[in-house]
Length: 158
Image (cartoon, rainbow, N blue to C red; front, side):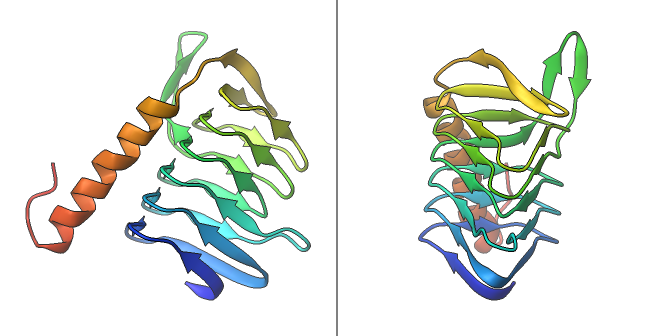
């Protein structure tokens, strides 16, 4: 973790995460989990802001973007009967609304803006469905929060 990085209350950072904020800041909202091998960097003129109760899954790249509250980024999903795994790229100036899901292997291009309650997939990413996923996404973030507490105490992670 390098530069101006703000981790709000109950954030969990999992192994091999890199956060680098030279020109701008990175802000991670309460109870958000940043999972293994995530790379968060700032854009040349844009910070990286992640809302509350988000899960940023394995191998996601966040680069100078804004993620709303209760989002799940880089999740496994089946699209057109093909399983797409974790990992997604969200580029400079992109904005992901509240209660959204971004499917694994999606590429959200610079300046793309997605409204609340979107399910986003593809390269380049587009809205493939609309649904309020806020409660389910917050539940996923809570599960990671509880695991982080157990892990910190040396207990088995479930």
